[in-house]
Length: 89
Image (cartoon, rainbow, N blue to C red):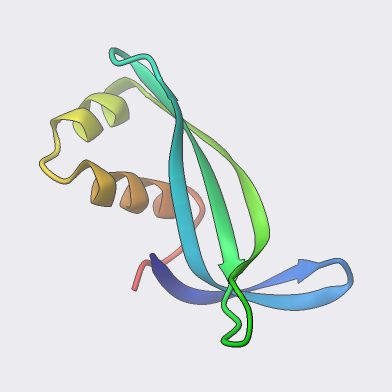
């Protein structure tokens, strides 16, 4: 998923993340899920490079809303982007 570019300090250099990946790590199928996210630098000459990664936790009404949504993938991306203060393109 593409995002509005974000500058990130990485190993002494400023990298620009333009791509966003989110994956479900665990889901108890009732009340909670955890996700792994990556912000990637887009470089036309090589595969995308992960600049920042981490985990997010979803529970409570966020979880039930996610499971009830018709497009669970888009809901998860939108939710994760909101938690990380990112803008999806």
